[in-house]
Image (cartoon, rainbow, N blue to C red):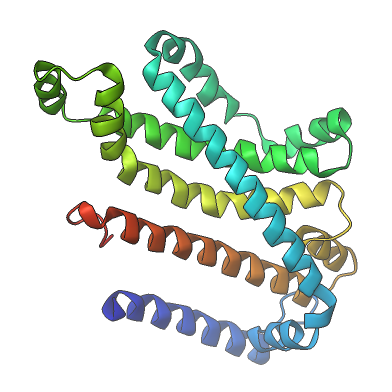
Length: 251
């Protein structure tokens, strides 16, 4: 674990040192590209100005993630259990991801106003697809020999699904959850750009409009930290739940 983390940390520190040195040597204006130390100073000194923005984004992200994952799982199970429905709707499922969120978002505001609903819909749209597709693949790739064996033992379709297919799809579910967890933060920030009173997206918009590049980088920093935290939570849950699955919990 330490060996795996060592090299990325070295790379990140090297990039920060080069960035800091270049900013000082080339005397780059702060409003163009602030040095890492300037960003950290702003992050520390301006904590009182943006802590409520972070809390708002976290609450919106968690709510949207929970809804998106629930919708994704339901869609995956329905499409697996009903093959005809899957054949009819699976292409539409893929096509739905080709619509740019930045284009769809204003339409959601027109239809649902500036409340929480369009924001949750945006996060749901970016979250449900990874978990739905990964779960469908996991359910479909259950060992056919095992399915044949349990059928010979007299198992019903429901028993095959609950006792065999669903447990075997759990590792793929967590793969989708990891992607959805990182997308959920991005979806929350995009939804806040539409029009909100608070949130990291609002903070970033205000900072960019006033040429406070250092605050924009502070917002980016916290977006990355939130993504890493959510990703780490999913990995921790995966390790706990997949202890029964040899080799999977160590990923």
